[in-house]
Image 1 (cartoon, rainbow, N blue to C red):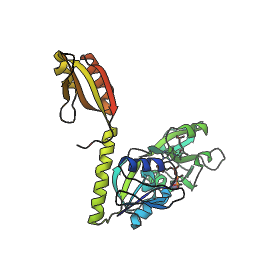
Image 2: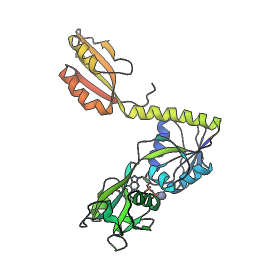
Image 3: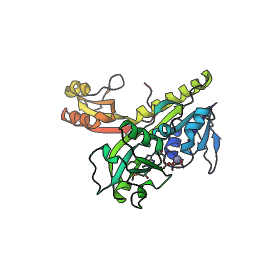
Image 4: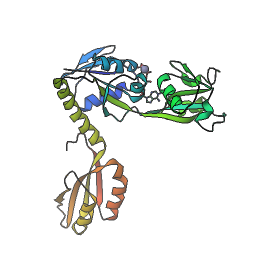
Length: 283
Ligand code: PRT
Ligand code: ZN
C-alpha cells in the first residue's frame, strides 16, 4: 500500500484527482473526507492543505504527494522529486507599483517586500546581494502596496490579471513552478514497486496528451512523400481505400509539430485529414 497526499481543496485538487482517474485509479471523494482508499490500486489518498504536504512526505506520514514546486522549495523539506505533472503552472515573481521606477534588482534595496514565500524571497535577495525587509503575510499579498504595507510583493502569478487590477507590474521572476509528484526519501522496495506502476500509468497518460492520432487519405502516387512526413509509433499504417488509386494513412503526431505537419501533408496531396485524441499511449 502506498499513501498519497493531495490537496484537499484549491487549485490542484481537481487536476490531481483527474490524473488518478486517467491512470484508471478509482477514488471515492466524499465531501469532508480526509482519506480514502482506491478501489483497484494499492493506494490510500490523504486530502491535506498543500502547505502541509512536503512535511508529511518528509516524515513518511504520506509516501508520495502531489504539490506545487513553489510549496516544495519554500518549505525546503527533504523529499525527492519524481515527476513534473504539467498542471498548476505559475511563476513566483516580484512586483512593484506600476508607476514606480525600476531599473534592476538593486532597486529593491531598503524596500519592504510582502510575501507568503519568505524563504524563497530571502534566498533570491541574498543571491542578488540585495538588503530588503521581508514582511510575511499569509494572503491577499497583492493589496499590500496599495494599503501602504509594503513597496513590493513577491507572489504567484499565472495570467497576470491580479497584478494588473491591483496596479502592479512584474519586475523579477524567481521561480517557474508546476505541480510535481514527490516521494519520501526512504521508501521500501515494495513501495517503490507500486510507485513504479503508478509512474508507468502517468507516463502513458502524459504521452497520450502530447500526441494525436491522425487519419488521412492520399493518392497512391503521393504516398511516399506523405509517409515521409509521418513518423508514427513505428511507421504509419497504410490501408487501401475502396476507391482504387487511393490509400488511407494512419499515424501519430506530437502536439508541438502538429500544425506544421498538417500544412505540409496538405501540400503533399493529403485529403480528408481527421485528428483524434489518444487516451493512453504505451511505447
Ligand atoms: O488551502 P490550501 O493551503 O491547500 O491552498 P492555497 O490557498 O494555499 O493554494 P491554492 O489552491 O490557491 O494554490 C495551490 C497551488 O496552485 C499553488 O501552490 C501553486 O502551485 C498553484 N497555482 C497555479 C497558483 C496559481 N497558479 C495562482 N495563480 N496558486 C495561486 N495563484 C494565485 C496567486 O497567489 C494570485 O493571488 O492567483 C493569483 C494570481 O493569478 P493571476 O491569474 O491573476 O495571475
Ligand atoms: Zn496553501
